[in-house]
Amino acid sequence: MQVLPFFLAMLFINCSSPNDKEEEMPDKTEPPVEITNDVDFWLTKGDQSILLKKQTTVLGFGTKPNTFPNIDVSESQTYQTIDGFGFTLTGGSAEVINQLNNSKKQALLQELFGTSENAIGISYLRISVGASDLNATPFTYNDLAPGETDLDVTNFSLDPDKDGVIALLKEILAINPNIKIMGSPWSAPVWMKDNDSFIGGSLQTQYYAAYANYFVKYIQGMENEGIMIDAITPQNEPLHDGNNPSMHMTALEQADFIKNHLGPAFQTANITTKIIIYDHNCDKPQYPIAVLNDVAANPFVTGSAFHLYAGDISALSTVHNAFPDKDIYFTEQYTPSNGDFGGDLKWHLKNVIIGSMRNWSKIALEWNLANNGSFGPHTNGGCTVCKGAITVNSSESFERNVGYYIVAHASKFVPQGSIRLNSNTIGNLHNVAFKTPQGKKVLVVENDGDSNEIFNIKYKDKWVVSSLEAGAVGTYIWE
Image 1 (tube, one colour):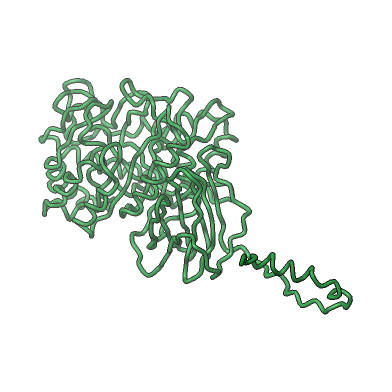
Image 2 (image 1 turned 90 degrees about the vertical axis):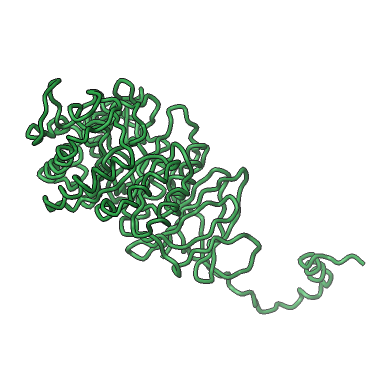
């Protein structure tokens, strides 16, 4: 015997007795249950058809059973406190942003650093101490003629950055006075190095004290400009000495410099700026571990910084697990000029934003904030394929690139002081959850698979159903 589906059976019964309709029956139909929206949902698709747009989908928490997998968000276990999300404000970034006319420039800065509905709330910036390879030319704040030295660093001057990075930082601080700033040098002054070159070479031991004084003067000089430096790293990418500028520094040398010179110099000058070690790739976690294993250097060190041009993001947890009292920072990853928007969106959300956060990082920074249409300025030998989050095309025009959306999916919704919450990864749905200082819950989800995924977001025994197309990224916010 064939069994009719329930709704067909009911239709058959209702239609088989014509006399049923002769007498009007009272309407016993229950009024429809109105579903209120409990969760705001912002979406970016890999095909760029939707770019960081708030969706109108109604997402209401309920308890109706379904068979979809759950992303469980729980406050029962919490992790690190977040310092922020952002970019490196290179000298080249400042140069091209400062080329915008005043109205366009102010509109861009408000969008990047403000708190309005259309702003993305960048809360952390990294800057170079002296030039990086994304300056037009290499320089430090204590450049001398060949053969000269300056042991007391009396010729130290911030003048090379006064009209660029420093001037722009003052405008940014007027918008967001609480933004945190990390300084990283690409090279010590050439006269301190053993090869008399901006490229490569090592810091000579007889100049360790002078270089520590250089950092002291830098932090004090920036403070005199109204710019507080929250943290410094002794050297950007200390194992990559082929860039212009660059400098090689081993773990033993970094430990020696910190314990015998930089740390004590900060103490003497009453400087509280954090010292963050390493600032290089995830393939060498033994480097920061070696520095932290030095019992004399360890007390001066707040944490370790990483890039991901080599290795695996889990290296952050390797170092955290070895020294759980020390912080973790993710400080740089670039998107390439020939990159695919969808592919870069997926990879960077999975690794830089979600991956670093799930491996204890307090920050997640992409590389260059802005450049021109030729991916400049850069030094001779500097990166020619590093794409900024913003491309400045003219004094009146700029465009947003994939790096903008990578960072914005976190920076717009997860302010400083947020705490990472526990959440589970299910299949291709990589995610990370936070609780903001205002008590909101934020979940960032990236669909790393090749097909649409339907899933529940479960919180306190209730859930909402959502879906993400392949390669899409969603940020979900609820009270």
